[in-house]
Image (tube, rainbow, N blue to C red; front, side, top):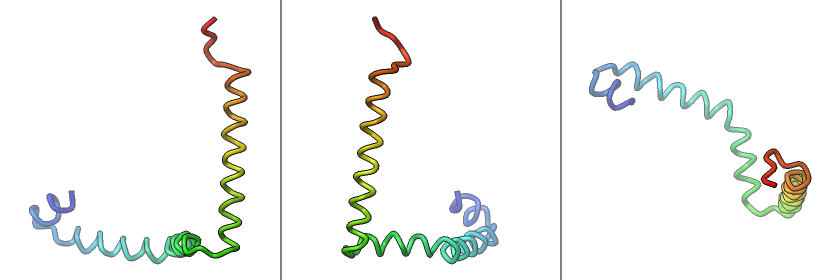
Length: 77
């Protein structure tokens, strides 16, 4: 869309505006993105935290399956 409206439509202010919004978003959201990349680096503390998060998600998925088994929305019987 940027190509169609910005370059072909000769509206170069859209390109500048998009670049400006990209810089602002990177500056405001950059902290959380940096935290996620550092979590991928392999720290032992973040690795334990990631494994705990994995175990929590696994427990919740199994609990949801158990709930679906005992309380089905559609009864096929």
